[in-house]
Length: 421
Image 1: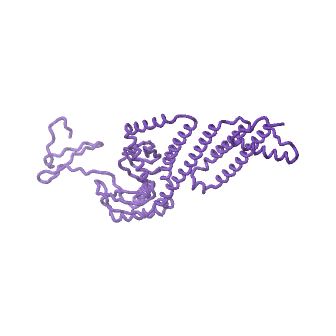
Image 2: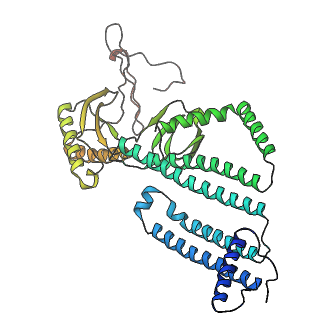
Image 3: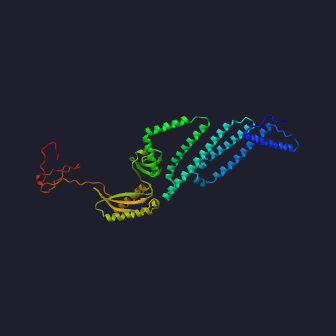
């Protein structure tokens, strides 16, 4: 049987010509006429294409498995890549089998035109480069943030700042790569991207003129995040709101206060930041005692209580230093206020303060040290001779007291029938 059709052009044609030459050489070696049916060559070419694709897919599967088995080393160099290996594995297998199908169709003379193949190859290459660029950029950002945070505080290590800036930086890189890749793909499939670029320029101008507050929020937020002023997990006071930082977006801070209320504060409204949990904290404790107490004795008791609390295994891990009794802070209306201070771990200053106050109340009760409550001294004044007038008392459960008369140095009883003695 003679060949009924010429081999197709392109890669498949070259492969079929090679197969034809091998077949003719083999048939000539055994003494047969050098003629091979075209359909047999097409079938052999298709089978060879899918066999090569299958072998390449198996090799890629083994490579992906070895990459996933790298474990902590892979997570350190490319954070989050292990979770996306499955997606990349399926995409690579799909590309291989698509190439095998195209070669098989070309072998039968029904392959797509060359421009279509060139566009498809450009799209696939663009997507692959965008994915690789995103992975490498994300890994580089994560390593840079972790190294900077560890250098600043080795005991703290990579943590809240990386959790704060990494999503923002990765999101920015992803948006930029997605925009470039998307425009390239649209251009390859025949879409005119000139109106899209013109529209993007108009939108940029509109945003620049009409969204000054948004631009101010973004610029201020970028400086705050770059300076590491606030991180996720810190307890801060901004714009009159105090709470734990739950999230930092590109333009706002989200706080949750002690009552559970969520406050969203734009960066543009932030003029001062009070970070209550950065690196270390101090528990400030003010304790009032009665004026009759010996202040030196009270200070010694407070120092001993601080050492006792620091030696407690339940609190030893949260207290960094000894209790400092700073002395008398205030001579208040009803008490002498003594101030104490102790260095604690971040976020634990309030718990340590409550524990110390509880211990102080129990010890003061044992030692008879008075913790006064507010009271008042009533002064009725004095006359020209320096004598204080007598007070008028009324006993609810007994007979009314007789008003003081002139003989007692008081005023005569009132003649007004509406005034009771």
